[in-house]
Image (cartoon, rainbow, N blue to C red; front, side, top):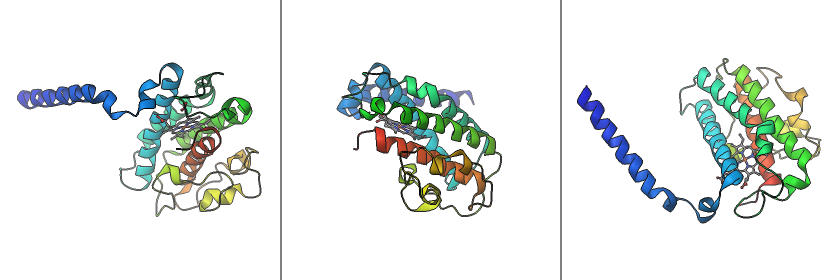
Length: 211
Ligand code: HEC
């Protein structure tokens, strides 16, 4: 037992060492230049991505659904959203190497609104996590493929109809939240994941440079 453990530890540290040495090589130039608050918000966003990918993989059956992991992921997103997120975008922190658009500071209220919506949705998901989604899913495989507000297609598009994309209402409105299972296959968790990715993508569409 002991020997196996030691061997594994040696492999792990070798991997860690290679990881360190390879560090900057794998990063693009702008990533390497990011420091301070810009670096911090990138780390937050990358963590959001990791968690969202995990949640999507669970809904698609690529990972086993685990209510506790869903709850923890939701709680972590909730903690990183709202004022925590907004604080990582202080005035004057735009421009290269950041991908944040000047609209973050020109349209502060909507930016803060979306940051809050992210927190609200994560809180709903945290509560719904215990109800394992069943049946086929219409959720795209990738969170980036969930259409933004006002876009057609998918249950999300349906919910946003008839409202201006800048209103911050429509599918994001509280009225549409928690409409309950039966509204679409997969129940509440399914619709929560739609809402979650909607907010990510809506914010990126308005406030982040296109790649
Ligand atoms: C309130 C607006 C807002 C919300 C909500 C938001 N983001 Fe972002 N995100 C941004 C902005 C702005 C940037 C660009 C930041 C920069 O370059 O300084 C960004 C960047 C990113 C990046 C790129 C990071 C990198 O290293 O290049 C990823 C990945 C990302 N977000 C994922 C997510 C996911 C997943 C969610 C939802 C769970 C989410 N974001 C929610 C505004 C938001």
